[in-house]
Length: 254
Ligand code: ADP
Image (tube, rainbow, N blue to C red):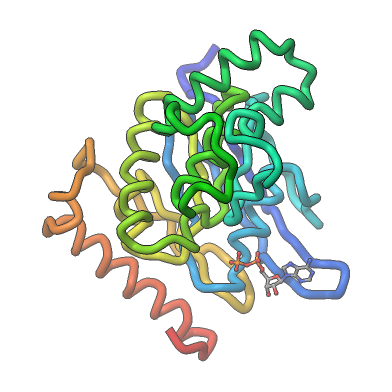
């Protein structure tokens, strides 16, 4: 065996042209290592969701190759998409029910997942009794209950107010570190990408493509002080500049 760690996700010249002829993505090649927190950052329509759906196996690439290192994955959507008639516990248990996991074992795993997202006290509530942020926590618990190694998240906090979003971002980071997950996270928020990521893939639209692969090193762990630090601002400025450059190339407004 070589000393090279196998990629968690490997994309080789992956393209997407939708059946109506829309070219959503120019060829993309990307290697994501186990334990990375990678954000796909770019304006609406640059192909972020398309790329994430192809990694998830929900959409077949028109050309190119995608390899996952045989990992269990979960997908968290922008909408919490909970069953309104079922309580929080039953909503989180759904993937285990679908997989035929016996009830006592499933119940234990649900309790664990609810604890991870701080919702143990809300197991018997219905979704409508919860705030938007709490509903999203339920959705994340449902993603974690199968114990994935790879978590794919499509703008999961995009519909939340900024304060709630910041809190969920911080909790997600803590979970990522504690569980040793690999995360691929779609966002069009520069500050969210800078707060969360160990690496940002900057994308441009028309045609959808990768314009930069940007590593964000320390500090870890990240907290509220990081949000106001010079390093945070420098990363944000750099990414803003890159996004503006990319849209200037195609004549779009930044
Ligand atoms: P993003 O997530 O960055 O907003 P998407 O991946 O959703 O971008 O979309 C990329 C491009 O592909 C956009 O121009 C969008 O309109 C187009 N698109 C997305 N889904 C489809 C589809 N099912 N059929 C045709 N075009 C699509």
